[in-house]
Image (cartoon, rainbow, N blue to C red; front, side, top):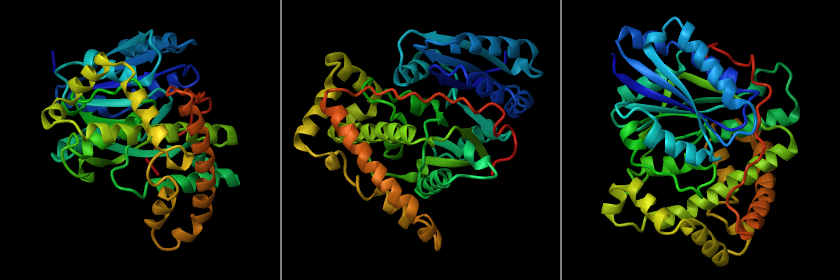
Length: 374
């Protein structure tokens, strides 16, 4: 049998409205034809976790149908795996360290509420790593579903402008979809108190060669002609909830970075096992560090460095007239950030780190599809 070249992990929690569209977009990819031509195979694992809806059953139904009828079915195996424990962090650890094929050279991680956009997205993610030996992670272009609307509201235009500012930075990594070298991923273990900021942690570890050097943005490469569509937050409540989650995540990353940089070189070299040992010795170690940080930084604007300026730094990196046209989005984003930081500060002071806003994606079906990226 042909070797398994890559393992694709789709992580989903309560996504019964989106999971069929997500999985369907995978099986429309040119990846399978490319694998057949090279006599290679992949595996697709849908890892649901702690679901209380029909997501696991729907995922199993789609995968069974594709395994029987797909024109390139000999190029892949697929399974639906349902974990009892809720949480993307645990699901990521399980996929990377226990569930994915050990012989896979590349792992693709994706959320269960996105739609791949462009038939070559997956193949180009994998190819980007093969073509660039310095890169450890390849990413695509995230596209908000509202970008396809012919008429956009003011809030939608601001949302799109905010995304444009975010993309102006180097080495952007979104946890919604990326490819990572298996050897790199398997030296990463995500602490269970990390919250939903695993992309920031992975970016920090990868771009510093496991905390041994200054940030090198070349470790993350953008694949050509690769994109995915996701449902944008547009209501005030959803925007604030998402920003609160991000501020919690940035705080946790700040605390974690300071602790891990103090590790000995031998501990950094085996970072995954080091973090497992720390968690086994004290399951609450990260929560304790966060509590210490809050006592030394008692005000919400002290949660992490640059909290008041990062949006305007992104604006400053934009070219020419865009600095002016995107200024309202930066100003509004600053206000939202300050409110979200206050909410995050109160939440963390109560001793919590697990925050689960409802992010169901109900409108993705039929959006984006396999057209070329915009």
